[in-house]
Length: 515
Image (cartoon, rainbow, N blue to C red; front, top):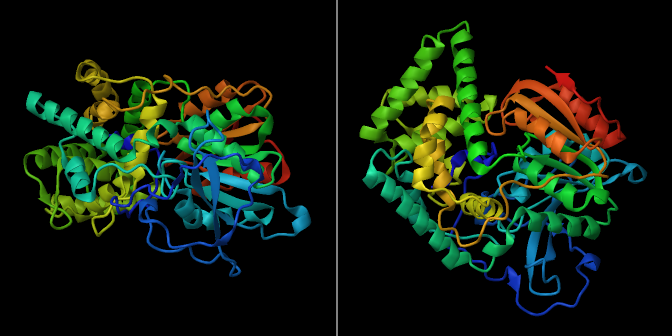
């Protein structure tokens, strides 16, 4: 099954889908001679989000009563044949609120995943960017393969329920074979249902879409805010189009120098650190920690819960039971953000009493399932993009050989993340490289923010990204905090540094530390 930690997003947004929706209408099979850079976007009030985007409600009005606007941009299906078939890329924007003569341009966001819908994420997080909106049109999009943009469609809702219910930490040959067979079946269904788009969802393809977007939006430079996987996308863009980079910020930074195996190993350590920090926080409060008396007691009780659930699941969200795999997913989701720690405490309390509802809800939010049993295409798109980008294909022998190192890095999550390496087995499209090339000599400065307590994109990755971008390009800032990302933490040092750069062009001193 796919590695849930590699979703690289803290979104509780991914909670609705209808995988029976097909890609019909998303591609145009007629030859194209038009200059796509000259197309005029037809902005209009946003429709109700597509089920595959993970929301069932239109975005709320902006402060002051302004409405979000949506449009569709034509892009080549195959960038090696730019005058061939096209696909539609769904966009959303909020026009700048300040004086027109102070407007800088568009600020394009990618919130991560890969597989997350920017059309639903930007309105959800929009209030955080109110100050940035004074001088920018805020813009986001569903990357190709995601949401409304030629979505990758794999298994149906019932099949996905079974897929996510399987044992993610197989103990014997029979369970290992079942995990591998289920992964192969999932991947084969993706090829059957989405074979036309699968070869064209690499990060390099989306980076080229963003440069087309820059031109269609009328900007000389791409001003960009990338979060989580969005930092990898931004780095690839900077490599391909260094002279077109404007003011750019990378937050919750993906390490561009590692292989998928090394990335998963780093995440094992990152989530173990987050679990330790959660336990320390809970047990240090004046009131009694309801899930353990000491840090070790908290971790021991969680480990026992997971072991017990493997043998005997408990009632979750009817009619499904909370299995070990669902509980692990729920715990991982809660560790993405300190704001979710209270839900983890409540969920563990419930589970110890035989009720798995909260942990099941957290698990569903990670995998994109809503309360009606419908899935967004977050996971199918995530698998498709990761497997198209990543060259390595791991075997059961590879996993077994690396289990000791994963277990050492994380006694709690090591097995689960190691077995997740099988996700690209028998994928229909060859992977592009061991890791992305983000070298961007000649690009404008890019502010790279590392969070010391980030579980999904460990802190060390920020420095490596800054170094890989090149001298004079990557400018590192450290935030000593918890959670996946820094700008949304509310830390005034971080928000001040970001806002000063994006709004005024003031680059913070490299090595700045915010606590």
